[in-house]
Amino acid sequence: MDKKGANGYWISTTKIINKDLFDEYLNKVGPWLKEIGVQVFAKDNET
Image (cartoon, rainbow, N blue to C red; front, side):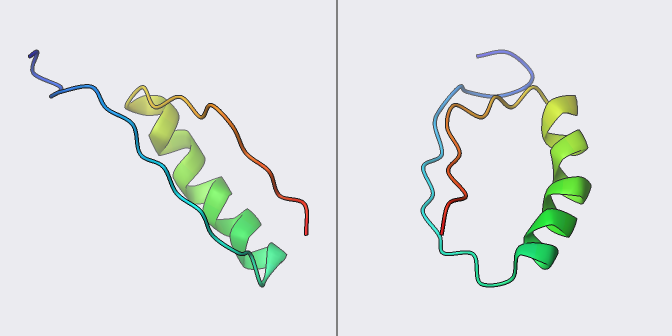
């Protein structure tokens, strides 16, 4: 294990009820996730 920690997967399911707030969340969290090397394998935002 390196200094970053163990590799793993995080599986999450959710229902988006406010697209504007979700977009705001992605704008704030997205750059940080890239910075720490997170890869998003799938995303479906259809309602």
